[in-house]
Image 1 (cartoon, one colour):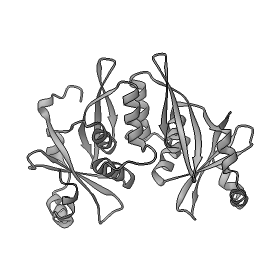
Image 2 (cartoon, helix red, strand yellow):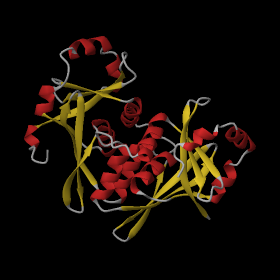
Image 3 (cartoon, one colour):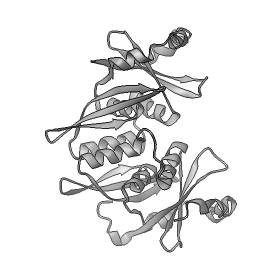
Length: 158
Length: 151
């Protein structure tokens, strides 16, 4: 992943978080800037909530897990450069957090849900590799999105 | 004054549909039950049982981030109890400076277990939570509920 050029990456925005009516999970809808490509990523309820809270900017009385990560980064002069969805295997997505610490760029492995929750809290860009976008799961994606409706998506439209 | 605590167990509380992390003073003294949500409980349970997840979980990411700058977690402390809500702090050492960072106890404990860091509670917190209701509740727990993580 370290060798992936920025040119191979597609920048994504978090478009919304929706409950999956079929399972007890949530779907994070990522879209590219031209709204041409959609990348849905299934996450757990807690992870979905962590992303929704960041999107809505809801302050909590106590820091949530990703607020704590941000707090660590702030205190230790770690700058989050970007997060990248790097791979998909058996419908499981993998991600990396790119950061600068002590003048050196590093990458740290992460689940996409953590990476996105952290990116939203640190105003860091979210990318996916062209390769993952091509291989993204499900020929029935359109059917799913149709089923979910576009009305629900409006809430977090950015 | 601080009292060192050990994670003594993790159990489901069907009445509140939540999980309880049970901390106990090292010499088998005071107990401190902390109610946490399902995902927080699972983060603690993974660490207690030493299960390596196929992908890094949230607190593994936290640890990786700290490792990337060689920051060391010195201790975590349950600092306060206000209206049934616990507060905690994580103490870090980084390049000869000490940092103290606000956290929920669940995050602090999940991180402490992954970094072999001692867990403490303010004595005042232990006093505050020692209510009769709690004692009654604990009496009704079966011994086997505690057995699993006995150290």
